[in-house]
Length: 519
Image (cartoon, rainbow, N blue to C red; front, top):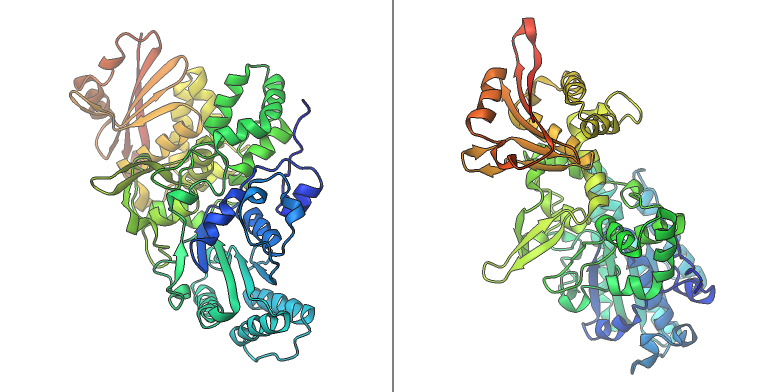
């Protein structure tokens, strides 16, 4: 069996089908979608298949049944009567410039006005949209289908520009406010984005907009289950395992660790990120592909400014009403972290009606933690520099804890004065350890107390205790007195106890440390 043809970067359904690319069949969701109502909203992370789903719907509503031959939709009782489709794609524009949104809407509206020979044009963007919908419906004698892709990109892209953010919010509210008044001319409207519409005034007039983002029926509408992955890409996984010189199961485990883990509803399947899977199978490398396309810096900044400990991100709890709020005007980063794919559902407790969230996989962990680490110490973001985390990794893996601590002490001299506190040192060391691929645990609850950080590699175990304006002796003494190493008594690995204290005295300001070896 030959390898599949991988549709990397292809988001057009017709091209994918006609050119013989592998298509994971999601057309079975078309009929359930149509039963949800006239106006539908779906939130999913970027590069997760939303654009392809919209393209699939466009082909269906245009009556291109030949493209669906052999697919689930072709076997369903569907109305294939063609409708005029207006698609507004917000993916392509640079919204950081002053009139980026206005320029895009003018261009898209102008293209449709020309296509349908519409000369009756209003003065405002909102007015032109209303006239476009009405005139297209009247000229074709058919109700219009409206597909809107990544509606919130003009907002997420400019979080640091509050003035432009407010301007774009008002423009989008005016633009989308037409949909409800035009409902007699609309057959179906489907809106996608990353952030949810609740608590955002954009859709306040569209009170019949159905949000299916956390609906169990549509949990798998974007992203791939493991069965879908194996059914469609087994030859590619076999080729990757051959390249890696390991078993098929070992390769599948690695793919699962890096790209699986997303869950968008209380009862759904764990999902793989399609973008990363396709890139991995095509390049025959398991690397972080998704996060390099753009990790929102403001999310990492929110986490730091909110005082959230990095080690507490996995296991954070939230109610449904928390997760459906966009939070543009809030310092709480959790809702947007969930919506953008940096957190996902780990479990749901029906009794308390609370979700437990976690980072989905290793790829997201690397991307987000690298960004977060740079919020504390920007020097770690300089590739190949003295504080590149790969240098710390080499020292931990080889057991060079003296080199690691010397590098860490030098790095901490970069910290501003207000950041010098025990929790900050713990956060930086924890982030470095996780990025180095070690097993890192913060504040392990032992029988005599909680250790600051425990880090394990294949051959070494490191136990850290940090103090601020106290003493190295006190830090190291706490590790001994509370027997943090006791639970490793049967280990064959060498154990290092690291007591550290940041001293503010001018004559000896900096991180002092002492290391003790066991075994």
